[in-house]
Amino acid sequence: MRVTNFLGGPDELDDVDRLFARLARAPVPDDLTARVLASTVARANATRAVLAWPWMLAGLAALALLTLAGYQLGASLAAGDGLEVIQAIFDDLGLLTTAPGDVAAALSEVMPLSLVALAAVSAGLLVVASGHMVARVRVPATFRPQRPLA
Image 1 (cartoon, helix red, strand yellow):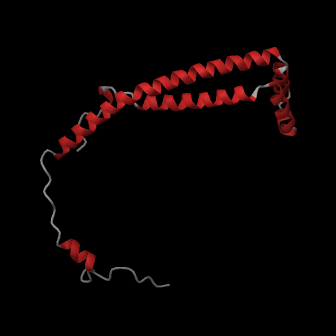
Image 2 (cartoon, one colour):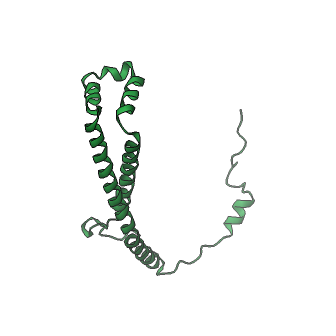
Image 3 (cartoon, one colour):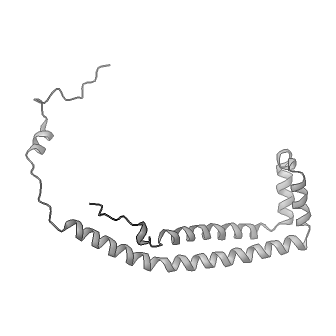
């Protein structure tokens, strides 16, 4: 199939090319780069300082909730037959491949799923909060570029 949507040569200009050929460059202010960098750095430092504390509090709350859920889950497994079921699963890992439904049913009987869900949610919140806190850490001066980027 023949392609017909290409420019034939330098003599054949369309309307858009003729329009842009008449445009002139606008003069750039001398202090444009300095003003943009100054406003960006000032805004980033202010935003970083404001948003670090809520994520730190959320991370501490998630860590406390994860600790509490883990303790309650361990206590409920130790009080019942949960440890024996988990040990039996680890003794014969083939059960997971041959009868995964039976293993899940046995675990759901001895393990409170609400505590497992609470631990999973709090662990996820801890990961998200940690990621946001690490993203707001200031970079030491030794790792910053020594020359200007522009």
